[in-house]
Length: 98
Figure (cartoon, rainbow, N blue to C red):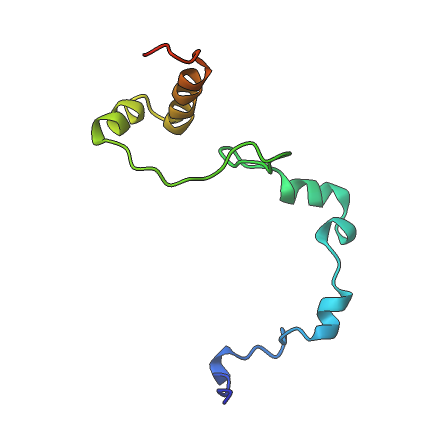
């Protein structure tokens, strides 16, 4: 059973899209002037751009508090520094202990 919409939430100037509206829709890159599209899609400082190829994978990892504190003490970029430390370990020849 479908509930009636709250009349306070109905906006007659912006009706809900129909299937036809979705079929006719075009990407912003096709309908906006190139200058405006470039401004709207420009990356902001600290915002990551799309990966060209899958290079890294997101994981959940539990670390000792001391290890985490050590890397975070260096400020921003602590995850990158952990990744670099792990890369160094992986790159060492087998049989060589740290």
